[in-house]
Length: 104
Image (cartoon, rainbow, N blue to C red; front, side, top):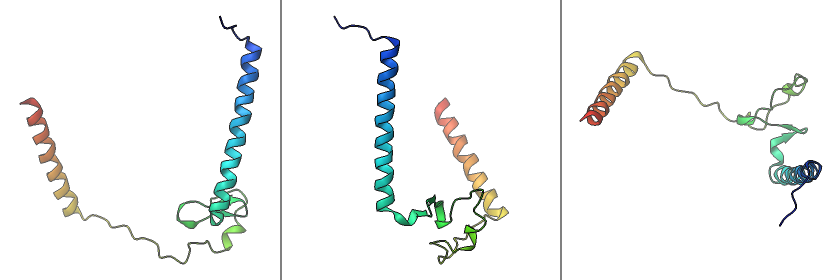
């Protein structure tokens, strides 16, 4: 039968596994940095929308234009009160129908 591992052996194997996983993560990070160099401006990740992520010392870096700054900002549409009321009525009718179908 197989010998049961001691607590020290288990810890040693867990440590080796953790070290191996960190090596894999570092290799994956290097591959991502190579594939997408525009994501990293001065080793700072760039947040969604092409703007650098906020850090404690990003005040001086924010003066530089971001990679996607030339793009026009997307305007979000808003619903008028009449549109919200129409959606509300539609959903009330929908859920009433669901409850009716469920109860028979």
